[in-house]
Length: 125
Image (cartoon, rainbow, N blue to C red):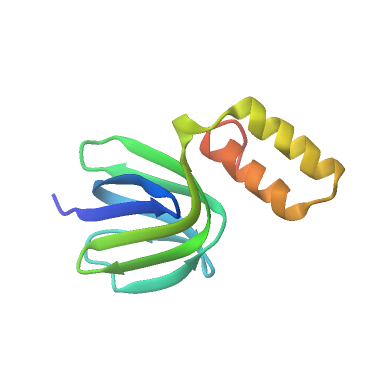
């Protein structure tokens, strides 16, 4: 089975590293799927969920906010300003942040909270 090596790194830590069969991330061009053998890519990461299908059949989901994506030679780097794995997200806190952002008409904060809830499986994309 063909695979690619994935590194998901936030400004403050390595979030996830491993082998995958496909990664889907939101870029400036829209949602982009990267599989082994894909043409080289360098793009801006937009706030959105990143879905990683691991070679053992598992799925890793992360909320990513800004950064860059780079792919070449079956190596994918996701360099994010902020990234959280779905199981690290405090859903109650994200829901409170969403309500606060809505009441303050803060579209940027609202988007961050929505992405966190989507990654945690609590809101439709």
